[in-house]
Image 1 (tube, rainbow, N blue to C red):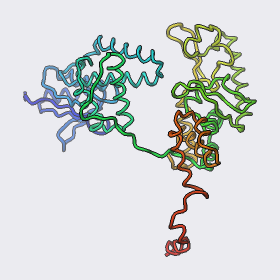
Image 2: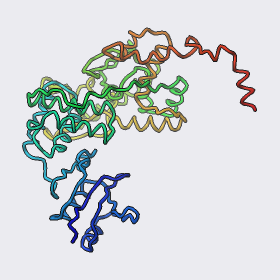
Image 3: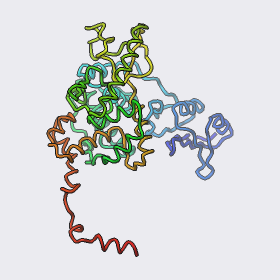
Image 4: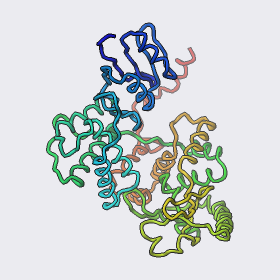
Length: 425
């Protein structure tokens, strides 16, 4: 049997490339893998790029020399993170699990959001696996630089993704291990490019909303009419609405900040009917011993019955209950954000809008249209909840549009008639 190593490399279209020195035994083993394909021109096998397939390959060829491409260590899915040393895929060491528990504890002590916790833990897992499961305390600036360089050069991640990975690693060393990291040679914080927001015209907003109905229409109108972020809309509670004063309160928004914003008059009547239907459903749930919602922080322990009160209920509740794994009690969550995301995407397609419209596009359009109407930028800043006015300044691109915008030199030459005649030829 040939002594040349078996090579496993990442391929295109979610596949792995297996370079297999020929032998009847090896070919027979390869034919046990589902989804395999022999490429006659490349003289290699293509198999699906999944953790299960990779484990199966390494098990099949146990005892033979195998070379696994190191880039597979940084697979997007956790089951594709494969150490290149040896044919076995070891389970995460107990010391690694203990370290990740310390990371989670440190994040929660600083009251970071749950999504930040998930992102940081994920990047730290990838970092440890990339270093062949070595403990981070044994790793210096050079290895950190190599990790970040692979992200930027080989995987071509965006600037924000590279910075997030760097922030996660720095948090691990500074807040968990108590180790100060010096200059990481060859790697600097990526500079995010300046991009203009995607903004819909008023006609496009109207056309998109006309393709929605029910709860999706109500949520999309709030996103546009109040300038809400998607999760701010999903997490609205009944007590946060003030229909009499045409305003609502955003609780624990981005940066854990509260703010007031406007409640569109167009949604007052349908929103009142929506709340009345929810109230009848809540009353029915209470009669069945249900009607609980999750409360922030420790309010559930301080006020044990508050989770059944009407004011704490979600404005947009989910249709089903979930069971708390600790208490075994049933709770109702808010409507999942993907429901409105899919509805808006489909509505934009039906409306024939070519722009990449999303739920956040409504927020961009809200700010842009306010500035077009002559409202000052400080007012828009307060309504959006921006900490710095420089963040809101991105919407001043509207000053170059419209009747009061900049008039270009080509327009002053009166070329419209000439252009019309040229295009007719």
